[in-house]
Length: 127
Image 1 (cartoon, rainbow, N blue to C red):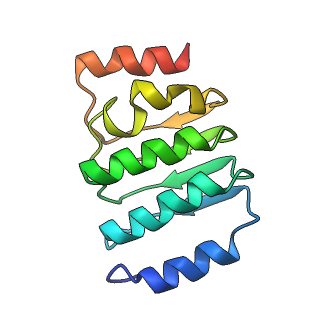
Image 2 (image 1 turned 180 degrees about the horizontal axis):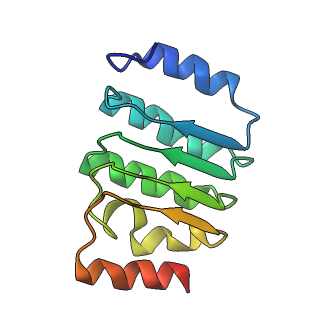
Image 3 (image 1 turned 90 degrees about the vertical axis):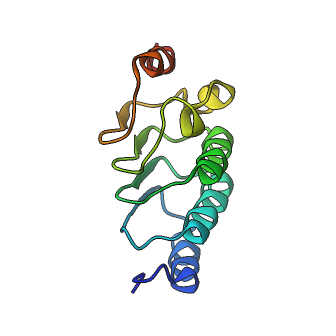
């Protein structure tokens, strides 16, 4: 169980999933340490093409880590970051790492904060 943000269990799950191309995770009990571990995994897993992280609060520091990891993984074509407390486009989708997400065909950012100015950044990503 990942209840309580058990990082050791998440580490075992990620290690067992090292060859996977799709990863779906999320639970409100995810801790900051879990998000850091996930970001490291994403940055190293070149084969990963689909990532879904839902209902996980991602603080500003971890948004930067995720952004960097997503920028390193050039194969992700499906990305879902629903209900993660993101301030878009800052953090996860900042301008420095948009090129790493150039293969996106599916993007779900529902239930996050997207001010009017943020929509320009998302439009740039999708164009």
